[in-house]
Every structure is written in C-alpha cells, then in structure tokens.
Image 1 (cartoon, rainbow, N blue to C red):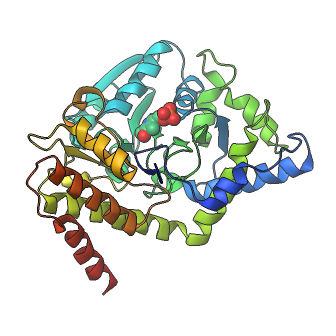
Image 2 (tube, rainbow, N blue to C red):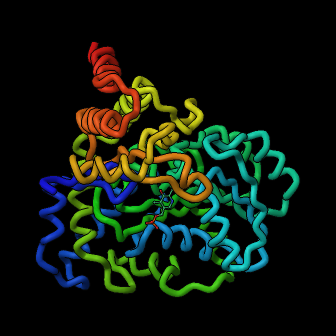
Length: 382
Ligand SMILES: *Cc1c(COP(=O)(O)O)cnc(C)c1O
C-alpha cells in the first residue's frame, strides 16, 4: 500500500517531527539531560490536564494506567461504584474486581451517556462506596459523558472520583482541577498523537491520602515509589526513552497550536464526520447530544458486509477503519478521528466511504457526505 491512513481510535497517526523524535539516540536516564526531559514533560502535561496535581507517567498501555488508578487508592473489600456505558467502563469494573473490590456496577444503555439521576440514586444507595469509576469518552460507542453533570451530583460526597480519559484528553476539554476529578488516566496513542506505550495519571491531594491506607497489592505501578523518584526528576525503573522524546515533541506542538485550538479542531472534525455520515444516509450509534469528537460509531449499513467494506477501503485506499467491540461488535463500525487529524482528513474518509459503499452496492449519491462537510466548514469560516 502506498499510504496507510489510520482512522482508528488509537494508535493514531503521528506527525513527522514526532516520528523524528522517536529515533533520537539514547541518553543516560540517570543524567541531567534526562532530568530536563522529565521536568518539561511533567510541566506540559499539567497544562494539558489543567491541573496543579502531580502527574505520573508509566511505561504501559492505557490499561496499565487504569490498573494503577485502582490499586494505589483502594483495598480489597472496598466498595466501588462503576458507571459503565460500554466496553471500557466494563473493563474498569473488571480490573477493580480482579483486585478484590466489591464492585457495584451501574450500567447504562450503550450509545447513551451516564444518566446523572440514576447514578445519584446508586450513590445514595451506597453511601459506603469509596470510589466512583467511570469513562470520560467511551471509545466503543462514541459517547462523551458530561463531567460537569457528574461533578454536580458528587459535591459534598467523600467518594474518590476516578476517570478514564484515555480517548478524550487533549482532544476534549477536561479541566481536572476545576472539575475536582481525583484521578485522571490518560494514554499516549490517542489524542496525544504518539505511539502506544505510555499511560498518565493525575492524582489529587485527596487521592494521595487514600493512597496512604490502600492495601491492594502493587509493585511496578506503585505511585509512591514514582512520586519519590520524581522529586529528583527521576523514575524508579528505566523510563521508556523513545516514547518520552516523542511525548516532549508532541506536547510542544500541542501547546504551540494551543490546547483550545486543538479542541476546536477536534470539534470541527467530529462535526464534519457526523454531518457527512448522516448525509450519506448512515446512522450514528451515539445519542447525538453526547456524540464524541474523537470517535464515531456507525450502524452497519443494511445489506452491506462491513468486513468487506473495511477490507476494500484498506486495500484500495489505505483507509483503515475500526470494527465494533463487545456487545456491538457486529452492530457498528467506527471511525477514529483524533490526534494528528484535520478537516481534510475527515473529508478523505467520507469520500473513501462513499466510494466503498457504492462499489458494494449500497445506494449512495457520491459527494453528499463530502458536501455536507464542506457546507459546515463554509459556515464555520464565515
Ligand atoms: C484505548 C482505551 C483504553 C485502553 O488503552 P490500551 O492502551 O489499549 O490499554 C482504555 N480506555 C479507553 C476509553 C480507551 O479508549
């Protein structure tokens, strides 16, 4: 294939400067050069997370960060509420269970956001719950939860608020301190536009107090060891240097563009995709009010073998789309539109999709999706 165009919700494409940073020569991870690297990264991560809380970087998949967000703050037998709207909410519950938490799972219909009144009821019914686990942006359904609505029902409660923001951070606003989220988990291969292999954890003072008594077993993911080393801009174990070189470069670029502009760009890309998809005649899985600006799940078009459609797009155009996950594996396919993407990328995937659908016999008028996107951009520009 001449060119691969990733439209999956991670790993996302990376830009040439980040690519270059990845091939930098190794440095001594105990030397001054490393200390400057870590210092800059942590300072810039705080700007992205909008927090003055410490931020810990683990060399791990995002799921490792989720695990760290549980084992450092809880003890076996602790009751936790897990609000789930899809695959990743379910995963949070599974991790907590694996470490012996008593999980009260509050499920919401897939495609919908968390209903704050139902969650409030669960909080009222379980006043002894130690933590609330939830996903900010549910990647399997393309739904973004409203964190402000959750903040509203959490006020005056002691419960620890733990949020998986792996597919939202950078792209969708998450003002950690203003919201008062205690633990925010991020991951590298989504909107940070660097390769997989890093997770991030912002940890509030309240969470650090929980950490004092937390009895769940941990070693590699122990934040106390991390925080201690971080006082000297070091890590207890060898850091993932190539990833950190890439992260330093990506953060510089994100802040140079301006976080607000990055988020505006994602909003425009998300909106373009949604308008285009609807104009083509396909149906979006998410409740529109909570539709995600980083990933869109689309009902499989009737009469079309979606696996064939995805193969066609991949083989002919190098356009890679994602399938469905979990309970909706055979109901939807997904377009990831986060990280190093812009509106022209959105129009690219819409036009490829139109052609693919047409070739596979789905009735589509070529150009409709692209036109809807173009009209929207024209409105924006005015
Ligand atoms: C991608 C993703 C994860 C998992 O990340 P891995 O790096 O695959 O472990 C967790 N939560 C959400 C919301 C995600 O999008």
